[in-house]
Length: 262
Image (tube, rainbow, N blue to C red; front, side):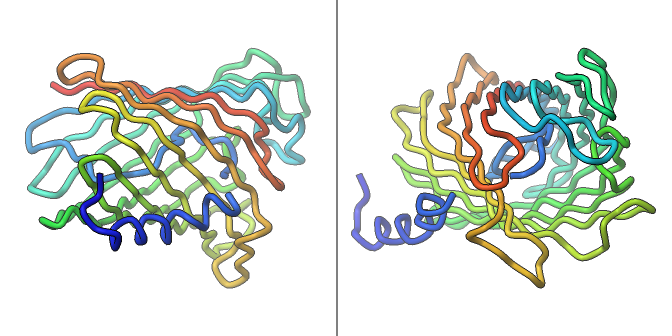
């Protein structure tokens, strides 16, 4: 249990916006970035998977609809210095329905994503940092051909609870990008640790729109019930089921993330 009421009050204050109003277009990576980092010389391999049983059937452009869409992504990361990590994401996608832009059952690569992550941890249990990405997109994934994402990371890790928030700015570039103004989103995770090998909780992803025209109560939201397991030494599994609200294109999403290190 928490040692002071102050910490409990802080958790409630930070988590309230999600529980009260809690997005993305279907992303191969549906996760909140936390304080975990690969050590120098260590390789962390991760397989991301998500499936949308209920989603949009027509995007209105040449990207693939989310309905019955399957995303798979291999991720490899390594530490380059204390507190620093680099990684690469290699996602692919399977179309779930026939549409003007897709045929059901088609497979295709969707992007190549390069990232740099930094984390600082305090003795009090608080941590902060960022994850920065530069991405090349295929037409089936995004109307922009290139993108930049800057994701802030701030959280508190206690013996029984962990709270993490990710304020995120994304920019799309290329001939068909809507414009170069950044989109803003706020993602968060609140976990209860049952034991060292089991935790469960809530994740929330919210789209607030363009940074200069924020609409925190009107954008798309997806809320997940999640659980995390330590399967064996250096092996971990994260699973979740999500429901979309407001104008989120995904109405139901299933996801899993498996990771190992060597």
